[in-house]
Length: 356
Ligand code: ADE
Ligand code: ZN
Image 1 (cartoon, protein in one colour):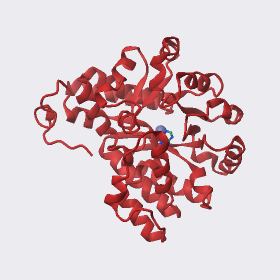
Image 2 (spheres, rainbow, N blue to C red):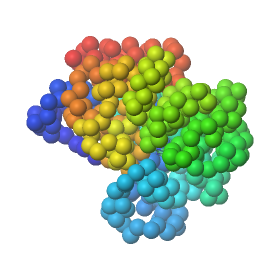
Image 3 (tube, rainbow, N blue to C red):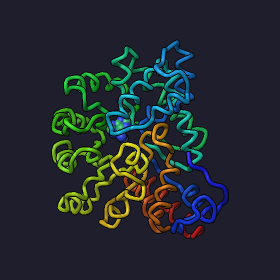
Image 4 (tube, protein in one colour):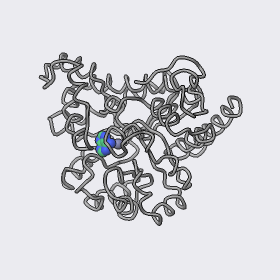
């Protein structure tokens, strides 16, 4: 993870770059995180601790060796390691411990509200009961609410490399825990698994009153963003950075205020962009899009939400007004009720009025 020293670190770790935003402003501003896969928060140290606790054999001899394997060439090369890492999760306590570790980091980053993805099929296909997965994660969310007043909500993702039939089976099981998650998403290998494969299950989830999101336009083409909107009827697009290749689509996203949950460090690690300096987030903002900043799989991509903000702002010389816009967007695009959203938006505006 990136670190810096002083409260105005433009003169320290970011010396020589033109950013005018203090790192402490980015750190301290209240924020929501809307794109975090809880299995992607599993740090190598915890993977090894859980492997030992559960007697699971790993293909890596040490934490360092595992970390050295985090040199990804594309989304699939990451997913192979990510699913292997998740194999150490067996008990309800494992899911609690993983989620609590994330929530502690998010709380330290001043995340006030987190909408968290989980991938039940990754676990149920290994024989882990659905109940262990959701009860462990949910208990950690309840503790964060009680201890810090930090809110959390769960979004269940269907793995798009698996079949529609498997997704329907997962939905049926999930209905026993309907009060513990707010909606569904679509993740895993994007190329070759277009949104239309899941049109019927998303229609069913919509009938059931669930909130809908999908990964699209991360590695896949802009057309996948369009079909996620038209056929899946999603309310937000996860990633979506390739939308700029299609000006009409970009205009539609801006006009309809469809939020993009952008994950800058993920995009670099998975080679969507070569360098953070090449990221298109400034262009996305300039196009009037409702962009948010998120960590995706922080244990694998080199940082949590504040690392994403800091590295992106430093590289692209973004300004305090961008920070205010991005963090306002995170609450506005959340699935919180309108009154709670407004309270957070007021808090953000008060923070910036005082700090800038
Ligand atoms: N699962 C976890 N992280 C993902 C990502 N960035 N894209 C698709 N599926 C994922
Ligand atoms: Zn993701």
